[in-house]
Image (cartoon, rainbow, N blue to C red; front, top):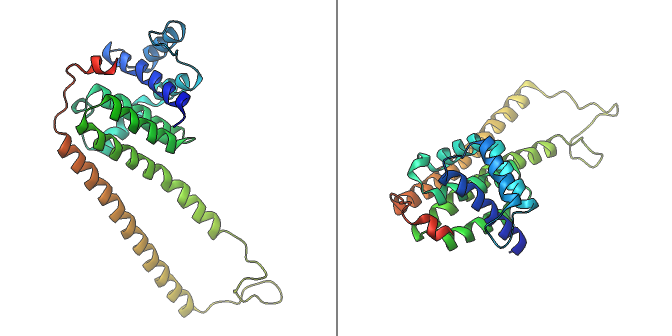
Length: 224
């Protein structure tokens, strides 16, 4: 774990947690609090470039992030503890809206919830962050597949090409047969992807059931 990055994720957590405790977690007021904390910090290590960029990332996408948390968890935000909401906001901000250091982000936020959260929160937070990572990975995988499909036919290709460089005209029967194969392949791919999504939902549901109602009592003391 990169200690400097981990510490700055903690500092960003401090600011966003404080904003929610003070009931000022809206983009404009969050940025004002961040500006104050850049000047005066109660922690030994002040918030620096990475921490500042993470708080700004949450401020820029706050409502989208909250919507994703509810979508992934199938819970209302108020059913989550303040600490869990804050960790998820930062984690999803990095995974979905930055994407530069996804593996480090997931590892660090999992470590943070293990350090600061309750036992029942660990599985829940981990499941949501992994779900966000899988969702974020899918567009890149699709783009890679599309680029591969668009490759020009090379001289070493197995496709027969006439001397003029034009493929022989395929018969109607051949085209129909290929279309049936393509439909079957797409159907199999969609079915497989649906199975993965269903498994993710089951994992989140199990984590939610194990977590039960969360309580904010004494949470700020644990956080400090």
